[in-house]
Length: 455
Image (cartoon, rainbow, N blue to C red; front, side, top):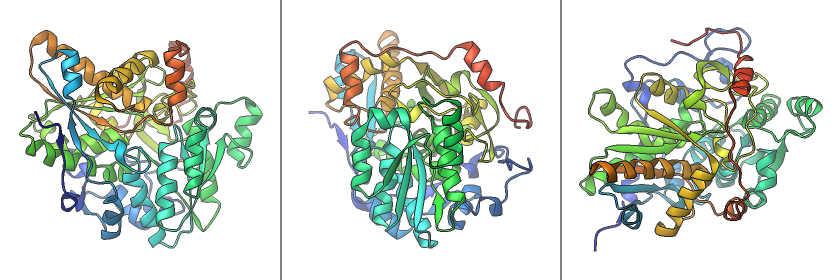
């Protein structure tokens, strides 16, 4: 019988995070202050983040030590297994070898606790008592609720309203870990009240929920904001995934030809792929494929520009691929991919041709999820299903060409809280959404006054 799982012992849990910024030939353009338009300074970020996380955000050191207390908590579920998808390979009749890194085994069911634990630790160490955050599908909110509980912090989660209504059991899990969950937009903040005044039936967006969470954090001395994706320090924390993967592939005697991940704000893709980027930039690494929804096609149809990370313009201007901060995506079930912007580091790779991006409609990705579930036994999150669809597409190409490629994708989360979406898909009730050219141009027309394209 062929080996299916490559498992590392607890002693192999990474002791450092990998910082991609150290290996870029030139750094991405700086964040700009939303008021002055000047490069953001550490003092500008101090109301929202502890000094330790700000230092990580701007660091150019290649390796940053993981504190023992963080490694202790990560060891609850890490290292995570690398699994050969043999049954899927046979069903697809492909000569390719397909592997997946299973991040669904964490307590929250996704990759998100890799950063949530670190952020909660550094905030608790700085004397902060309370964290505020946003969440789309609920994976990040669940993860921060779990991490806050580990370090004795209070946690407020502003959950995008459409997901708040679609996924009640995500709310229950957050509340189990002591968090307070609020449907966004809400009446609790000026940002939320403004949105509701304009659109009382707003389904919400991650940009709106970020505005609410940032407003709350900025208004209280005992509270900081925690973001689940996009920022450099979040991508940094997630590199435990790719660092483990490198060891596991070496044990399996494999060199990856293609690495596939879904991409919303960029955190799971970054953590999975960044440790391989130095080789890619040197001309001998794997191909990188980022998969996203046609309803929110940031990398495939967005513009590379300076934009706010939130709807109300409270956050720094970030150099990124964006659909425009005013964009409110339709309520597809992949709530974690319903974000208008992309990590500046992932955007840097896309801009320079170091990664490919593909967009898929909702029903197509649910078909891929069912295929995977029926032959590999794991029900994936709708976000993860985008990566599965791209991996299947790669395997089907290999079937046609005879290429015996090694394809690896990040199984970033399970779909146990998405059964209503699966039920609707099985009943033929899900519909595909595609962003129209008119809606895209309307949203991009509201980009802020800033350099038209970052260098």
